Image (cartoon, rainbow, N blue to C red; front, side):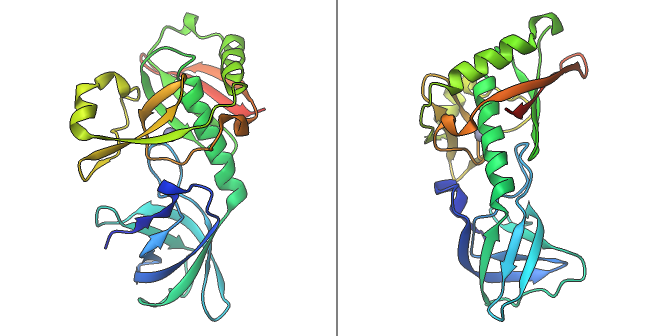
Amino acid sequence: MPTELLFRDDAYLKTASAHVTAARDGGFEVDRTIFYPLGGGQPGDIGWLMRANGERIPIIDTRKGDVPGSVRHILAPGTTLPEPGEAVSLELDWERRYALMRLHTALHVMSSVVVAPVTGGNIAPDKARLDFDIDMTLLDAAKIEHGTNELIARAVATETVWITDEELDARPELVKTMSVQPPRGAGRVRLLKIPGIDLQPCGGTHVKNIAEIGGIRVVRIRNEGKRNKRVEIVLA
Ligand SMILES: [Zn+2]
């Protein structure tokens, strides 16, 4: 059964109550969740499951479930699973998630500084990267860092915008990331808008205002292949 994705409307929820809808093979599903499942270059959330009997069980990963729209919360091997129908609470490892949100949003900002098709990307709690289809000589770490930080200093609020599949098909320039398909479903696509800076399909979690990123440092630029020139950043 599909899971209501509470982080889509509010990425700042740290806890939520929910009911277990399925539990098997070391994981469980709930009717609603604050846990982001691995996808679009962003790792699955970790945190804790709180049962009514007071047990606090670590959730070690989150993945998309077998049924479209469902989310699977993975527990450590050997952990007792909750029962279907059980009322539980979920708690995020917020420090980790917030770092992911800041780095994820930083990549959106950086993608408007490096003007080239994005061929890959990944976000970890301590660093993030984008791969570009661009000539190595056009990538200057100091310029990218300075340009990105200048935009972050504008302190603009981010917005979530929904458009129809047809509207997206009519505006292919919105899809910067060639390796990741936009999060389609039910005929509409979610976009992240950073006014004056970036607009692209994205189903991930972002900060409300880019000022929350603080600033970034470019730590490495490396040739990872013909169409993959990798720019790696950390939070400053
Ligand atoms: Zn995003």
